[in-house]
Image (cartoon, rainbow, N blue to C red; front, side, top):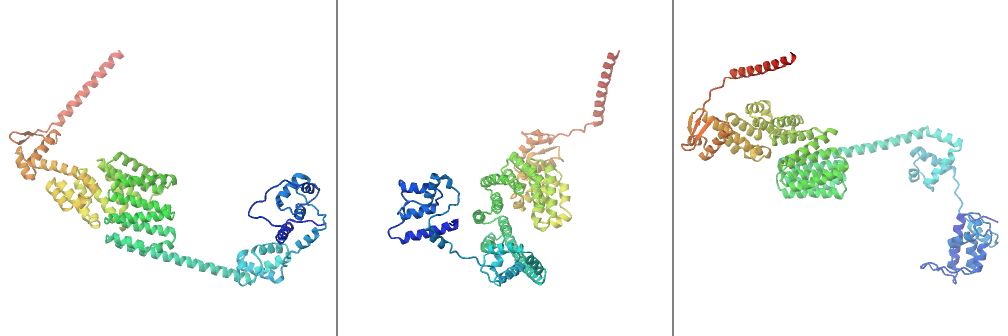
Length: 582
């Protein structure tokens, strides 16, 4: 008697299928599942016999032309009828099975490892280490083995002490040194290739940035868009970090140019869509920040607010503190332009809170200080605004030439705050000397003219400065929002300077000197009298202004009287306390 293993069972089943196919009277219906029928008494009796294998049942039922029962069905039913036969090796007593067993046992014998193959295995290990897939693919070694077979053979040979010593001895000799040198050479070549490719990418990045900067200085927005479209295939081959850095630099240059707004918006949106398709979340968020800056530039504040709210929700989930600072600064810019100062203050406060948690680069800290100063200046707190603007200016000035424009504009705001505090002489002194040589541009010249006009209390000089520098003064929101207040203050100071030499003066004469409509002058003088900025009387019948000259009060006498009153009260108090002591 012989036992039938699992592998032999599978081969026996294949032979049975071939037997079925060869029989013309027996056909298997593969298209439809077999229809289960009621089992016959012969099947039940054959299934109930002790120590009968499922394979015998299949053979016996095939002889009786039972085509509708599968192997699993018969095996399950046999287990149900005779539970004792479950999970047991069943001996076959039928002599007819020996023929099948003889055919099943005709399996392919395993190939014995030859000494030559062992030597090749040793050579492969010395050359490549324990990398079996690499050893199998080595063209110098002729193999008819798989990597699993190599691994098993290596484990078997390790148990042989003599072979292990031979392996250790050969690995320590010349072959080991040669293989180690070869590996080092290959690694060195890879490092050189990576260094060369990285160096090439760096040089290409520098060249592209220089081209974009040149186009930006020429205000050629269309040229930047064209160049960015042309280099897109090359950018796709670069590392994603370097590609994102180049694209952001190009978009920053594009946003800084005030031209072809529709084309610029379309170009930025196309790269945002590209980053969305490529699932580059970091790049997409940075480009959307640039798009918000573009919307601020073209005064599309509704679109800017919508995009900022979307970005704010995403960034809070990611907890990207650096990006949150950028978003809050842009949010404060938007609210300052809309003159929604409470919301602007909330945004600036949030930005400063986030900035306290992380390291903030100098340029971002300068922006934060600048917009904090802008908020205070809009709230007419020019002293605090001056301190923030001056911090931002020093930071921009220390960062080099690339932030020269930002430093110049911040210095312009420093001068404005000094002038609005009523200290034009300090503003003129601040803009002189080294600063005048370093930042001698139209913005600084305009602020010098304004400060000089304020110092001289001359409305004419102020009007000429507005005419000479319209874009630097009226075209700049940060300055234009204070020009009305500054002009009104200069108008009052100019009127005070004109009426100071007179005791009585005609309003028409003052209007003629100042070259303004007499009705406007009369209205302004009446307002100044009510606000006690000048001590005078206005006669509307004669249209004369009478200046009231009051003698200076003797402050020493007044102070002496005040001291005597206080001393009298103190003596009365002491006398009252003495009555209680008695």
